Image (spheres, helix red, strand yellow):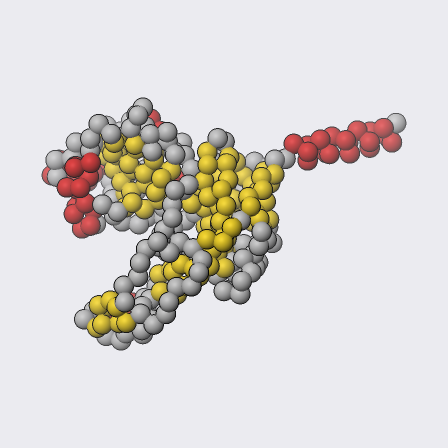
Length: 300
């Protein structure tokens, strides 16, 4: 009897494991180098000449400036504040949504899956150029021995090498999520101008793009972006402004002061993670007519 119970237990575990979905993403060399770098730039009145060239399949990232040194009048970086890196990427589909998954050779040794060094990154399908800014761009994580990510509501264990990324669905009770990516409109809770609780997806209209603008009261760039937003507020787009900093009274005052016609919503800061944006201002998350993510950080 004990032997029978043991066999049934093993069979049950095997069946459960067999149900785990594994998605294989084949990788190809790719460089997000569609943005042309100028030969020189002006940094605080000083002309800095570019001292490197992008190689095949390379891109560039913004290196954070040493702000304390700049305050003291010291220019510490004369290399354009950029350095080249390599990326591999492939196309993936989960829950009928297509997006890109890639690996970044962060330590530039031509190996894209070094634990504790290289990075896993998620991108919208049509994205062909990014400014990789770790402080504001959330849909990436450094590879670890066990890397759990949340994609379109499901949780996946990531295993990567130079040729492919394997995403294996895991138990939903696991909570050690390294990053979140939604290639569709996430089902986050928002509060409208009248204090009503709604879902962000409620604002997606048929045959219209949804533009979720991120803003806060002290953002001068957000005010400068208003004319452009009003210009594109047409029958092709639905615009909503999302604030995770200011209170409802301040939001209402801002809307009245600048004669804004679209809905202005309030949400918790955790909503930014679900949107794939950690608070880059001014910027917007854009979804197409089918509700697919188009851009994390659209500038207006």
